[in-house]
Length: 118
Image (cartoon, rainbow, N blue to C red; front, top):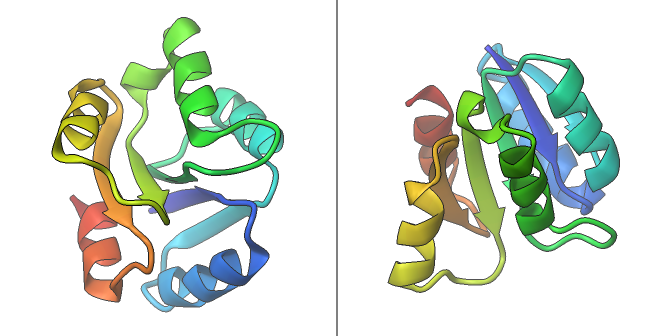
């Protein structure tokens, strides 16, 4: 399984890298949301872990760009956020084809594994 993680916090990507790699998954990371968006357009990933709060392009900006370009529906994105979602916010995101789960940081390992595998 090939996983792309887009998150501006290198400490988080380093930690999750260890977790994901221990499962034998191919883990690709970028700490730059613009680069992450370009990788999504050019490569195929089984799952994408997407931070919501990043400088330059937020996770919402990435999602809206993918939606405008008719690419979102072909993705399997797991949203990661340090800020809690309201029930309605989460439901609105999950209605979008291509968004598969929303997890709040700090992320429990078992929840992350479940979100990636399902």
